[in-house]
Image (tube, helix red, strand yellow):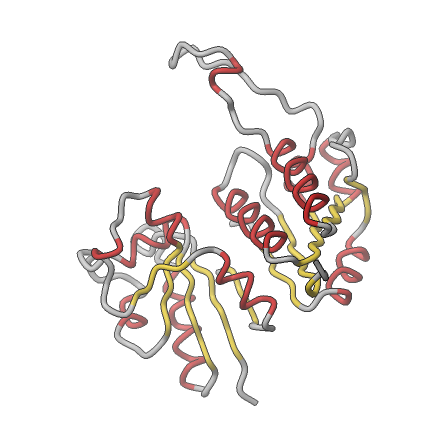
Length: 137
Length: 109
């Protein structure tokens, strides 16, 4: 498949906090499914989305262990999107704001996530046909 | 020059009166001759119900502005398509991507 023009998404919300994150993942998945290359710049709390040490937990109220609870982890969603992009012959570039990473101590990420700066976001915007900012409230 | 604008509304207008600003912006852009569409998602779709009382987006539903409601968000909230206000159409999230790719100026309010 010939890749369609690239789209860029800027994410700002941290994991486990806002439905905007879920919607953003749906948009990225849709873009990949439609054949687009996708660039993501994670800013502020969104740099924790790819944190490798996120851990699922049990739920005593539900009486389920961690496996049964199947608590969704954003790092796993990112890994899925990367694999999905690879399977489709598309490219998903994920860049975390390095300063935001250092502030939060979340430098350990899933593979193929790199650190950068807002300059990378500017480059992404210039290399894409369009950009959607998913703002935090 | 006429442009295309897609405004994404993800908050319940009854809970977040500031959502009115998104509606005002849409109306002003339309009055300036631009093509405008609203995409309701997450709790934003609560405004799409015919049974909803007046809220900050009501002027939109009375206008010629296209209003789309995310079908996934509707299903999550148990809203049937036949419960939507006149002029609101259910749409997949793919619609946002298609319009982004087509160059629509897309704002998340």
